Image (cartoon, rainbow, N blue to C red; front, side):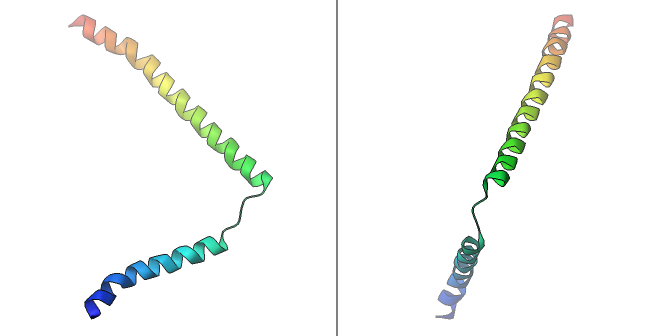
Length: 69
């Protein structure tokens, strides 16, 4: 019987911690939401620009390397 309890104790603790976490959470107000949305959009733009620059640099370099062999 102890083996059953020892197997379910971590699950019970995880569920208890999850419920406690959800009770303490609160919805963001408009200002906080717009800050998070703007920073997320900025992150997408920066990562897109980095990908574009890497692609724009490596396509000509790759074609130069492949054409010389």
